[in-house]
Image (cartoon, rainbow, N blue to C red; front, side):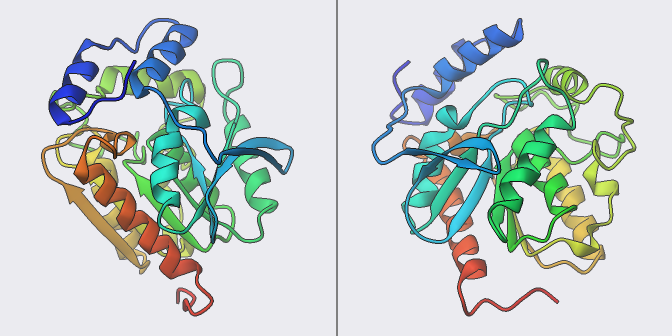
Length: 278
């Protein structure tokens, strides 16, 4: 599918797409929806035994792609990664293991292996990839944390999961993917609801989320709990848009602006002059 040129074309493509069915069907549909991705300058690397794609030059940001731990890959997120990298960063995206072939904690093990080989890392992710980055940051010391619409709460605190305003996501699908990827993990465990973990050790963090998405409260709850724990953070809510609008920065100026904010935040927190978090 060709990449849309503007928001009208993008909304039409999303409405006409059906990311459902078997895991293989979801993977093919999501790859088609995200459209053609330029591969110029993209190289394959291995970190901690995990295959990755790398693009750009500069301070390194490890980025975990979204897709409910079932679909998505570094290939579907190359436009997002290239946009971040264009601001002077090197973005590394791991091919962490996916469900149902491999379930939790397999993706976490892969994430930690990449981080351990990067000494120390700036990390980030979108949606389930944001959940993965957050869970990893609760276990490893990292320079900073950049999250786009992360899954943070399955305990029932969110008030926005029941909305029908999100063009890209709905609670029934989101919950089904979580059950497929994290079978048997209690919803009150921090692996499933990381806002219930000890957030006092988190590094400086930026949160980017859209106002119309079902995961809005997941970000608001995380921001509140992190602030109560005394952690430095920046929260930006983009009005009117939907889950993972940042995948199309070439069609949405708001998507490019969101990724620019992330890049600037990472640069500020990975520079030699950056002060460590208290």
